[in-house]
Image (cartoon, rainbow over all chains, first blue to last red; front, top):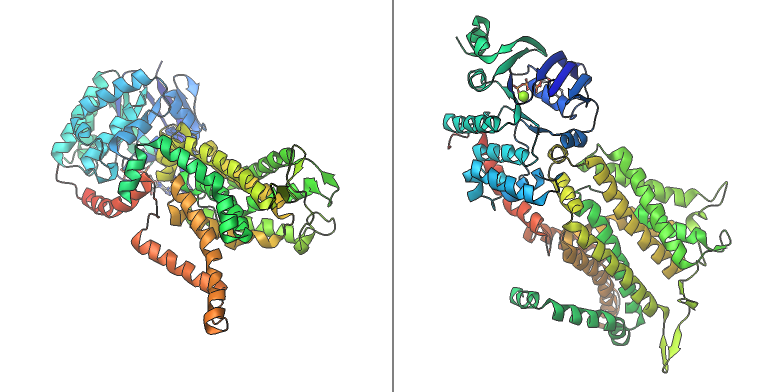
Length: 235
Length: 370
Ligand SMILES: Nc1ncnc2c1ncn2[C@@H]1O[C@H](COP(=O)(O)OP(=O)(O)OP(=O)(O)O)[C@@H](O)[C@H]1O
Ligand SMILES: [Mg+2]
C-alpha cells in the first residue's frame, strides 16, 4: 500500500483553480517527482497536502485521511514540507532553527543524534551554527531548510524546488544530498521545474500542466518521451 | 555600568538579597523620604508593571499587536466591583473575587483571540483597538435599562482588600506610627507582581515560549514545524488577559472606585509604550519601562511648584509638558535605542540584523556565489 495516496485533490484561490482534481501516489521508500512549468499548480499541491490552503478531495497518509486536518496534526503524522523560498526563521540562529525542527519530538538522545547527523550531512551548517539564518547565502539557507525538516524525522519529505535560485554547483550539491537522504530510506516527493535533474534523481514522475496531471510513469521513460523532451528538457 | 552588571551577574545570591531588602524597605524609604503621595505612586507602579508583564506576553512573546489591552484591566476591575460592592449587595471575599476576575478577563482574551486568529500586524491592531473601545463604551452605557455598570459615574464603595480579618481599608497604628493602607497594598501588589514575573520568566524559555517566538518570526513556518499556532495564539491572549484582569481587580480594591474614564485607549497605548521603551520581550526591560513611565510623569508635577516658586505663576502646565517630554523621549528612543532600553537578545538581533538581512535578501535573488 502506498504511503501517500491522493484522489481528486483540488485547490482554488477565489476564482482561480490552481489544482483541478489530481490523483497521485507515493509508495514507501520511493523518490517521486512532480514537474511542471511556472504556475502549473505544483506548490499549491504541496500546500494542500500540508493543510496550508483550503482544498477538496481525499488525501490518505499511511491509510489515514488527513484532508482538512490542521497543519500541525499533519506534521505530527510525519509529513514535512521544505517550502518554496525555504521558510527559515531568519532571526534565529542556525542551531535554533534546527532546534525548532525537532519541536514536536521529546526523545532528547534521538534529537541529539539527528543533530549530529544533520551537521555531518551539511558541514557548512556546522561551521555557521551560531550565525543568524537570515544572513546565510541562498544555498546555505536551502541546506538549513532541508536539515531542519529532517530534524523532525519525516516519513515523507516534500521538497518544493530545492534548486530555485542556486548556482549550478550548489544545485548539484543539494541534489547529491537529496540522493543520500533517499538512500537512507526517507520517502520523498520532489517538486521541480528543473525537469532534467528531477527525472535523473527520481524513480517515478508526474507531469503537471495548468492544474492537472497530464503524464506519469517511470522517470527514465518520461525522460525519453518526445513530448516531455520538447516541453521540459528544452529540445 | 556594564562592569557593575557583570560583577553582579557572578553573585546572584547577593543580588537577590540586596533586591529583597530594597523592595521590602522601599515603601518606608518612599513614605518617609518623599511623603505618602509617593507611596500611592509606588502602588501604581506595581500595577503597571503587572499590566506590562501581561501585555508583554501577547506583544513581546507571541508578536500579536494588541491595542485594546486595557479592556482586560477594565473587565477585572468591573467584575471585582460587581462581586464586592453595594451595587448588587454582594460582598464576596477578596481571595475569591480576584481569581474569578482574572479568569473572567482570560475568557474574554480567548473571545477576542478566536475571531482574530487570521489577522496579523496592523489589522490585528485595529481590531483589538476596537475591542478595547467597545468594552469601554459598554461600561459607559450599561446603566439602562438595567443598571450594570452605573454608566459614566462609575461604581463606588468597592470593598477594600481584607486578608484574614485584617482590612486594608483603614490605616494601622503601630509603635506610634501611622501606616496608611498604601503600605499594605504595596506588599500585596508586590507579591502578585513577583508571581507574574516568575510565571513570565518561566514561560520565556519553555516549549511554549519557543513556540511563541517561532510564531512571531513566521507563522506559516511555525505551523510547518508542527506548532499548533491556533492554540498557542489563544493561550497568549488568555494569559495576557488574565494578568490584565488580575491587575484590574487589585486596582478596583485599591481605589474603592472605578469608572470608564480609567480605561481609555490612552491607557492601552501607555502600557504598550512601557514595553517598547523598556525593551520588548525582555522582563527587566519591561519592568524598567513601566517604572519609568509611571514615575517620570509624577516627578514632572514638581515642575509646577518650581515655576510658582521661581516665576510666581505656572507658565507651562506640567500636564502639557508631560506629553511633550513623552513624545520627545519616544522619538529619541527610536533614534538611539530602537530595540528599547534593555532589549531581549532576540530583539537586539532583529534590529542589528535588519540591515544585513535586507542586503542578504537582495543578494539571494542573484545567488551565484556558491
Ligand atoms: N495565494 C494565492 N492567491 C491567488 N492565486 C494564487 C495563490 N497562490 C497561487 N496562486 C495561483 O495559482 C496558480 C498555481 O500556483 P502555484 O504556486 O501552485 O504554481 P507552481 O506550479 O508552484 O509554479 P512555480 O513553478 O512558478 O512555483 C498560479 O496561477 C498562481 O497565480
Ligand atoms: Mg511553486
